[in-house]
Amino acid sequence: MRSTTTRLQQSMLSRVVSEYSREAKPAAAAVSKAAKAPPKAGRKWPLYSNNTQLANTISLSPRELYKRIGKCLAFGCDPDQTQRAASLLRTINDEWRNLHAVSQGFYDPKNSAYTVRLRDGEPSNRPWLGISQASTLTQVAEQSIARILDRVLETADPQDRLEWERLRDSHTCNETLTTMHCQNKSPPQTRASPTFLLEPQVISAYTRLLSNDYEEKSTFRFKVVIYSHKHFTKIADLNMHLKICTHDRKGLPWLSRELKRVAELTSTDAERNAADGHARHIAKMVINLELGTWRRPDAKEDFGSAAP
Image (tube, rainbow, N blue to C red; front, side, top):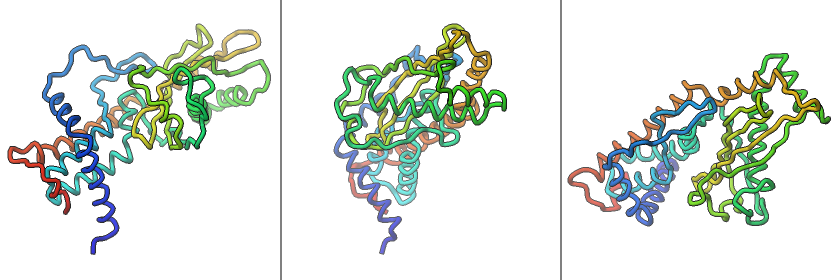
């Protein structure tokens, strides 16, 4: 009698094979063709808040990886390959948001992504113009920024911590932090379906400082990318424009200094490189699985050899 772990593993593998057989054949052919094509010249990598480029980054789509692994299983795996496929699926399921986020300069060094459940009816109507200032996803982005600012406060020097607390707790017009506007930066053709935004689901928001114009304009911007756990996809890419208002319209010297520290608080170069290396390792493991299954000269699709 098979153990519960084995039954769950088989169920997971069967679902992936079904996903491949239903949807992935045209996609897998396109992926294979793209893999043989030479890389396109002039590709621009994402920018960090200090305007340095993230070179040699990698973007991994969990849906694409699931379908590629499903194709391997459909062509038949020996017990060792089946175990490796199951391990890869668990890793992708647990870490896909980090893999996606790494490609845009995000990382989650201390599990600091803001994760929350959208309940039925939040928002209760289809949003006008994609993402509006009053939408629930904008509120999620603001909460994610608040979490980042909490981390900034907690890691500040004692004197700067007092200043952050004063800014956070101030109920007067002497010093006020406000959201000026929110922009949805996702290209129209890649924006999530409005129905995705209306469903009860768990989402995670990643936040980093995008630009710092505080010394010139008393403003700064955060980039917030929101992922749907249910649909394994990005549903919002928001630029949140914030402003500090003071009664005398003068800047706060301590804040100018602290915002420079915020840029490095989300993640260090070493952490980003480690996460990028992990993403590349997963991609290599999937390729190795393909080389041992459907990319063998004698490979034959049988949908029956995936079971141990």
